[in-house]
Image 1 (cartoon, rainbow, N blue to C red):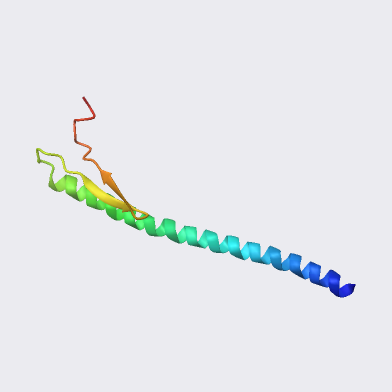
Image 2 (image 1 turned 30 degrees about the vertical axis):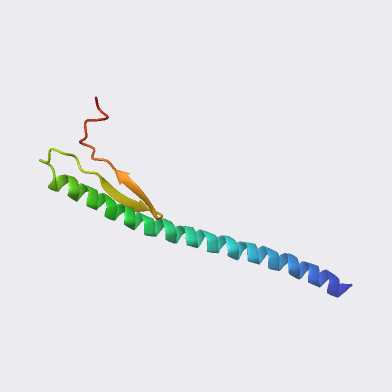
Length: 85
């Protein structure tokens, strides 16, 4: 009987520990993903700023594309007057 109670208590403790470790692992993976995308988004913002500064006198607006979690996102030229009319 003592071994049965001990095995149930051990299983409950192990379940709790495994849940905590799994939660910590998921949070660590999410933190890494967010950190890596932060860098990509900053690079994208720098690229967009550079494109718009270099083409400040351009008559035709240019669009820029960036990637976010593998999805390509088009960033329209904010100087475009199509939406402001």
